[in-house]
Image 1 (cartoon, rainbow, N blue to C red):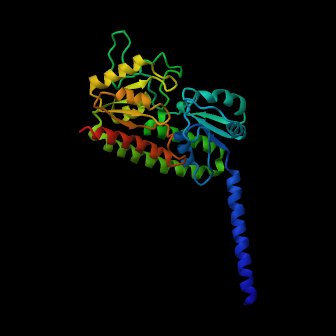
Image 2 (image 1 turned 30 degrees about the vertical axis):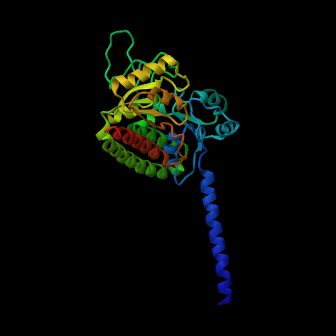
Image 3 (image 1 turned 90 degrees about the vertical axis):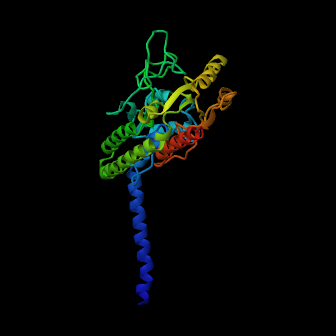
Length: 324
């Protein structure tokens, strides 16, 4: 009896040790995956749940528009088996590092994912047409802004859950190809994530329905995909590109636009200069709010995408509803 009691803790210890070894081996077998920015990292992390955790390059409150590549990022790319990014239009800083360091990895450019909807850049920060006599509706595909040096289309693709689903399909396909031993887990996670994205899409549409006709101004033109999906009325932006600080003339133009349109809200972004928003608001009845399209203020992880989209929705609903 005493011998049996003595052996029980030993057996339990051996069993626990075996489980730990097994778990460690599974984790070690997971491919090294690196992702460029938080919204995409969230989708990849959701697909990889139960297998591994991807590395993130642009972490914390950093923006891909102004990011400085770090030595730790270089190490991650050198070790990567898979790298996911939107593409050179969004993460221009990654082009040279990928060419130099990502040579052993499969690099997946998600702006090329099958089923992705792409929208051309609008014609200017306030969306005014060029002097060509053309008229444009909010739903048109505008000619790209020639001041933009990021290509011909807006790369904030994830702000439409339908695009997120297209990315998720491409992410899953790439992970299965790189790591077929965990294919069933990746595919099951994709099904769960697709269902959650469908529910999120319906939730956002319902939440914004009462305020979608109220015009508002954003810091930079990052919201076309959200606007087209949910019918909200972005009437202009303070700057065409977040890398370019607008001059006094641009700020005056937007100030006039807020007054002329009766825009109800002007939204800042956490990474960029809030004083510009205060100048635009001065002397108007518009309120201010904050939108975070790149998730600068959110902790990374599989839930971030949903927190990001709900955060934008809540900020819009709160500010626009306050105007009656």
